[in-house]
Image (cartoon, rainbow, N blue to C red; front, top):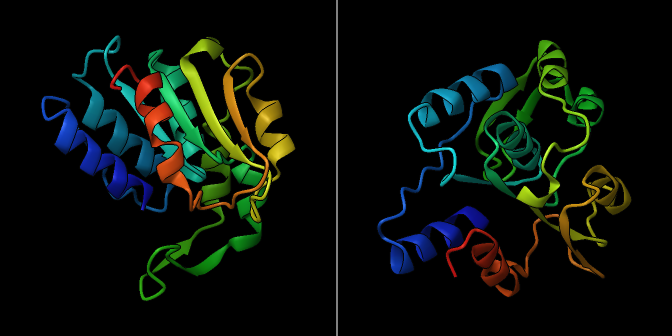
Length: 176
């Protein structure tokens, strides 16, 4: 839902912006290889990444690797720990008809992508909901010291009220 809203806004208001939102494979190593190949020729000073949940973790990895700006929406902080309980066949979050296998090796692949403190916290904007039923808002805010954080008093993991925040997301990306 959030990706669709961002895509629609980019198409409507910023048609010159190159928008890319690939379906990532379950393997973190393969997912980051796909992203790295896809952005290989992009200008680092003008690109940005937006990610929600596990995508926020991936966005952090990309931002640290490239120095680009990143918007994080209820970002996963320690997915290796959290997802180790979900090894086996899973259903896709947005489409329960889609199934995939989360392999034990994926936990180690996630660990490889972990970073310490953000090298440039000013490049990050995080929207974090205290009402997130999946992730702990205290861990999320603690992971990004010095970053711009919009801490919502309620909300949910999906950020169902994303429309109320999309303007700030685009403003942070200098696309207001």
